[in-house]
Length: 185
Image (cartoon, rainbow, N blue to C red; front, side, top):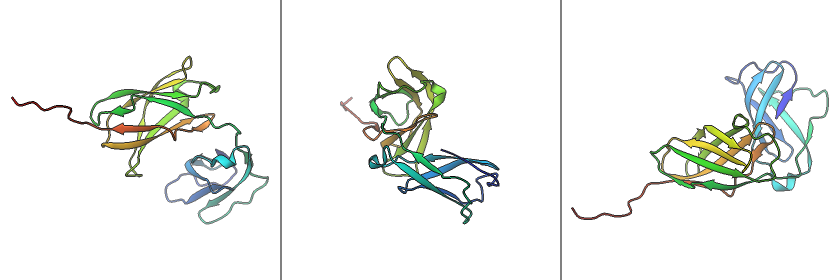
């Protein structure tokens, strides 16, 4: 989400910026300049689809004066991912992973339009960005490079530059290694 205005902080360091939608969905500020703040929302609640929501902002404890309504409409459609292949990877081996998006996804399908992260389900502050190396419009597949992580289960987060967050709630990446057989020498 982009918030336009004037006299915003020039940098995120040493500034407290909060942007919250009416349904209490937080929007984490990832960039700020004197006249623009960019933030990334968490997933909106399904009951917010199609609704018009207002936004409140707080910059260093001050609520900026709004010159117009800061309402926005949530899309009525919830775009989802369908598959993850492979869904289990080694914690130490580099692996290409394909993420399949709903075939109805009609926005641009270029690798540069996507960002992908994995987040540990057991240690929520352990997050790794996965480089997107290819995007195949013909089969709606994004290819990312996994370069290793601590063993465990991970949620996947896919963001598109125009669409926003894509629902990945049905996907889990399992990072594991196991011994399948031991034979005496």
